[in-house]
Each structure stands twice: as C-alpha cells, then as structure tokens.
Amino acid sequence: MQATATAIDTHLVTHDIVSLTPQIDELMIASDIVRVDLLQGERSVYSHSRARGYRPAGTSDMYRELVVPLIKHPGMSLRLVYQDPMGNYFHSLITTAPLTLAIGFIVLILFLSVRWLQRQLSGQELLEIRSTRILNGERGANVRGSVYEWPARTSSALDVLLSEIQFAHEQRSRLDTLIRSYAAQDTKTGLGNRLFFDNQLATLLEDQEKVGVHGVVMMIRLPDFNLLRDSLGGNQAEEQMFMLINLLSTFIMRYPGSLLARYHRSDFAVLLPHRTLKEAESIAGQLLKAVDALPANKMLDRDDMVHIGICAWRSGQSTEQVMEHAEAAARNAALQGGNSWAIYDDTLPEKGRGNVRWRTGAH
Image 1 (tube, rainbow, N blue to C red):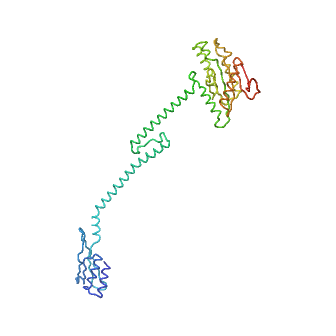
Image 2: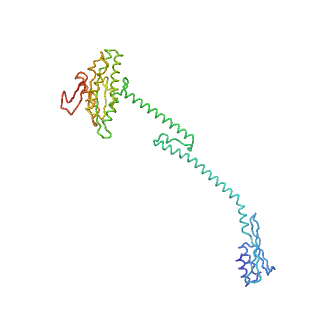
C-alpha cells in the first residue's frame, strides 16, 4: 500500500489527479484497492472507486483503511480502502474444511486397512515359515504353531497332524525296540541269542575309535539238554538246565562289561572285553569250582559237565574267525574229558591237528 501511495505522489508532480485515473485504476487492481481519496487536510478533494469486478459466491467483504501522507505534497494525504486478504483466507479455510476432513478420513481408513492387512499377512507369513521348516525335516515342539498364525483352523489342523505323526513315530520306535529285543533274545532262557552276541562282538572288533580294543571269548559247553529230556523227562531236564543257567548268569555278573548269551542249544558264549588270557584262565578255574560246589546229582556227572573253550581277540579280526576258534577250543576241552578248559593261543608252538594251537587245563 505504501508503494502505491508513493507512485501516485510521484505522478502528481507532473500530472493532475484526474488525468491519472487510468494509472490509478491499474494500481488499485494490482493491490486490491477499492477506493482512493485525496485529502487536503481533512477535506476530500478527489475520490475514485474501482469498478466492482467478479467476486466468487460467498466471498466476504472485509475492508481496511490506510491514510498515507504525501511527501512531495505537504499537507495532503491519500486514504486507501482495500480488501482484507486475511478475510478471504479464513473464508477459504472454512470452505475447504469439509473436503479436508473427508481427505483425512479417507487417509485414516487407508491406514487402518493397511494395518489390518499387514496383521492378516503376518499370520500367513508365520504359517508359511513354519510350513517351510516342517518340509525341511524339523519336528517336535520347535515347530508348534502360535495364536498369531492365520488362518487359525489351518494352523490347528497342522498341529494335530504333527502330534499324530509324533505319536506314530514314538509307537513305531517302541515297536522297533520291542522287535529288536525279541529278535536278540533267546525265548527259552531270556538271555541274548547268537545274533545279539555276534553283533556285540562285531561292534567291538570294528573299533570305531581306533584305540586297539581286545578281550576274550569263552564258549561254555553244557550237557545236551535234548538228550537229558529224552532220558530224564521234560520237567527234570528243565530243572537241571535252569539250575546251570542261573549258575552261569550269577557267576558272569561279577565281571563288569561281560555278556552271556545262549549261542547254540547247550553252548553258551561269554564276551569279556579288555580281559587277557591269564584272567580268562582264572575265571574258568573259578567257574569249575562253582560247578563242583553244586549238590550231588545222580542224573548228571558233576565231574564231566562243563567244557570251556577260550579264545583271545583283538580289533581287526572277523567275528566268524573268533567264534570258530572259540568253538574249536570248546571241542578240544570236551575231548580232554572231565570238567576242563582249552585255550586257543596262536603264540604257542603247534600241538595237535591242523594249525590249531592249544593250552589246556582241568580241574
């Protein structure tokens, strides 16, 4: 406004106020001035109003008045009446408020929708991650679902299936264990059978840890129970058989890590890891003393009842080789007569037939 008044003051130096009307109109339009009054003191000597132009519907007319003294014409001043710009600004805010609120509401709805969608997708992502872990082979409590997975019924169904699979796996494991235990057990005596004994011996001979495992196998040959059954009757033969088996079991249990198994009919095998031939001879002697301590029996010859074959083994040998040597030693002990033992010892000079070397003992 000050610049407009200064421009009019400058033009009045060379022109009269009436001839300046076109220029004043241009200045009034540029500054949104609606009326200009030229005052001489308090008296108006000239007044000019701008022609009313287009005004948008609802536009408020808020005017302000400014009196500017003319520097180049002392005693004179210009009174400028102009449209208040802030009035239209507030009016425009009121006009656009519903649109602004509508846009804000739409933005809020979009934000809530995106957030809801993210929550739904996060549940699906959790379910997808768990499914991938299951496909990779993970099982157990680590792949159980959570309440955040979606769809919830799909997650619950997956948990039920996993529980059933786990239960079936446990049942199968128990069944496998039961089958193995029965397959490795002699049904008549409850001891391990030949298959079980050979597997245990083979495991030691393989020596997975490469520590040089060694030990002794004893083959204990008792009287033929089938012949006893034919001569003495079933009940008495069973009684004598279990008496001898209980004696063997009780005796072998004294030695930690030992294993007793029914190898074939009346042949019983004993596995003694980390034992030497000298220790085996001592064990055989003690066993024969225990047999001598049995009550006298007219049905069995207590002095010719137990024959023991002993064979040392070391890692790297085959199961067949070790058991063949132990059985050959047991046969040799039986040929000696009486309760006795025979040791297969490949460190001694050859004695007897073939390449079998013997060291025998009797009680």
